[in-house]
Length: 265
Image (cartoon, rainbow, N blue to C red; front, side, top):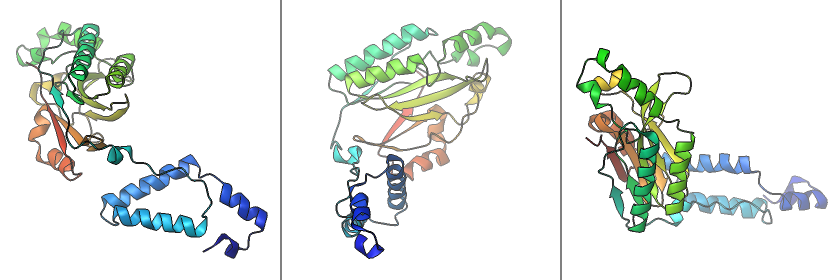
């Protein structure tokens, strides 16, 4: 239906035709589009054709923000991945962070587009919990807490900067501090884009065996297959890779690249 059919004056019609689509509305529409496609309720090509036809019919001169999907526009047919098989500088956050950034730069120099680090690379895996009784491990735990990092802290920002500078995607396993608890930790993993954007943050749902002495239970918020120009990337931590439901959650999202992280021991 044409704008004239709405009973608008020429001035009102001109104002309508020249208005820009509000950013928050564009985001909501984009989210709805993605949901419809994901649920198989509409074909992506058919959806674009329908929207274009509607825009041309209702408001042919309106200036709208373009619908751009960088992941699909720049999808690589193949890429080089680097899997880090190395030890951290054990329970030394700063030294391990420097080592991680060096690995990211090295991988980028050798043409890698994706680099995956082990479970709890920052600041190390708490293997002592499997070797000695808890009563003798308090000093280790205090050191673990002191060298764990916040997901939005300066250490994570340095990793994001390294990924952005190198132009590589990074999967990083780390021990995450709980900002609301003095001794609260999670066994976590993040996916960082080649532009330095934090794409996903996953906390191991249930720590395995003796890990329960160190880390708290996570949740399912990070069980996502993230669309990137490399493909849909998902990740599970250690024992989660033997959890059928966790694996199915990612498979059901059409995961294409899977990061299975284990401790570097």
